[in-house]
Amino acid sequence: MSAHELHAGHGGHHQDDHHHDDIHVTRGDYVKGFVLAVILTAIPFWLVMNGAIQDRTTGALVLGLFAAVQIVVHMVYFLHMNGKIQGGWTMLSTLFTIVFLAVTIAGTLWVMFHMNAAMMPSHP
Image 1 (cartoon, rainbow, N blue to C red):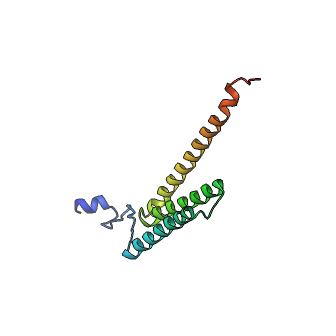
Image 2: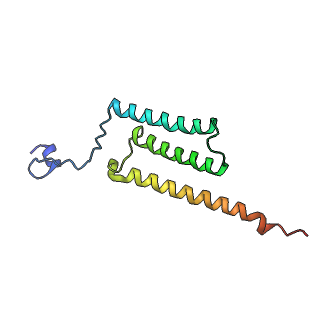
């Protein structure tokens, strides 16, 4: 028996326990991602430049929604992130990061908003 067969075990049958992530990307995938990114940039730009949304809060929410969708497009088409790569751990860690940042930002804003009322005495 050779050293390779001893290492492989079971009479020379080598079982590859390493799972390789096959990322098959075509030029069409990149073009599709690019076109979606351009559209998701052009629509909010048009909305702002033409004053289509008058309410500032609605505008911020709409632009934030377009930004979130564009982030997903970039993650899928350019970073090739999906639930299959590395057994889904890449996507899971990304979701954990998003939740952690959302909780941190929301908590910070809440503390800053209520800090003035809690720390400053009321003036007559």
